[in-house]
Length: 132
Image (cartoon, rainbow, N blue to C red; front, side, top):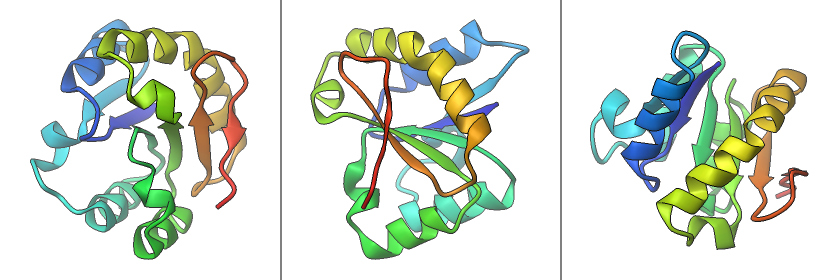
């Protein structure tokens, strides 16, 4: 799996996951791939052109901004967005939940077409598809 961690999450999360899953998955932070300040529509298009990527983000704005939403929905990307409470949690709590949900992320991302959006819950291991 190729995984991009969005800029509203700590680069340490991406580096830690990349080290943990070395040889099995590639995990990069958006700043390391595209630099700082890249617009959502731009990175969505560029990443989709590279093929299938998984996006982990706390930025639910993508689901509310029409241009960003349409770009994502028509992409080859699969998005997993932190629930509001999880996004506001400390980095260590976010990492703990990502590790607990990693098998679910792997499984779900293999079942769906690009453009799918899911919410990563604060407590449960059941993710829900975002219907926007």
